[in-house]
Amino acid sequence: MRHISRSLALVALMGGTLMLGESAASAQGYYGPAYGPPAPPQRGYYAAPRQAYYGYGHAHDGFFLRLTAGFGYMSASETYSGTTDTYSGVGATFGGAFGGVVAPNLILFGEFLGTSVPDPNFDRNGPMGYSTSFSGAMSLFGFGPGIAYYIEPINLYLSGTLAFSTMTIDNYDDDWSRDTNFGLGMSLAVGKEWWVGRDWGIGLAGQLHLASMRDSTYDSRFTAALFPLLFSATYN
Image (cartoon, rainbow, N blue to C red):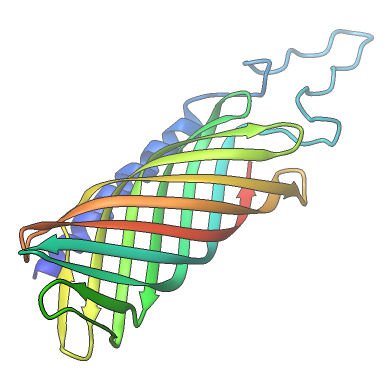
């Protein structure tokens, strides 16, 4: 029942975040640096071409969608009763951002992030410390509002997201599962994209996702750090 309640809460909160991103796209009426719809052409003249295409017919305007996927290293640790437990490993990561342009090359969006590490390593420092690995998974999820800025004409972007995050650890060997409460986190990314169509671009990005979450099992806090390399596909 606890898992069902947490899932419903996560879906509701993610839905609110994505609606925020959608409202940034639909409420702007943004048409590029002119900040308004183009004026109709006068008789005997042709309408001037849109600006901010950087000589290649491309511009960041209107609706924004960015999908990411890749691999990264994650480490999460907590300290209780003089003992520090650390879980770590390499896993797959994914994400999606939805929003809209609010000023030249400036974008507001809602984003969700997820990473799952199979069969993580486990290290215990303290009395009776040891190291091992176990059959299971360590997962980190986050969502929240974000902002991105594109540096033109090189199409390099800087992105940041306030990520409300939670983590789950499943141990299949000993048949137990632990969930943290939602905590505050942030995601920072730097990426480079190449246009492959008028509105589509693909690229690479490096990301840092940090989060701190309360673990009610030991009345302690989990701190997690994720360092993924991402492939991106962006529509804008």
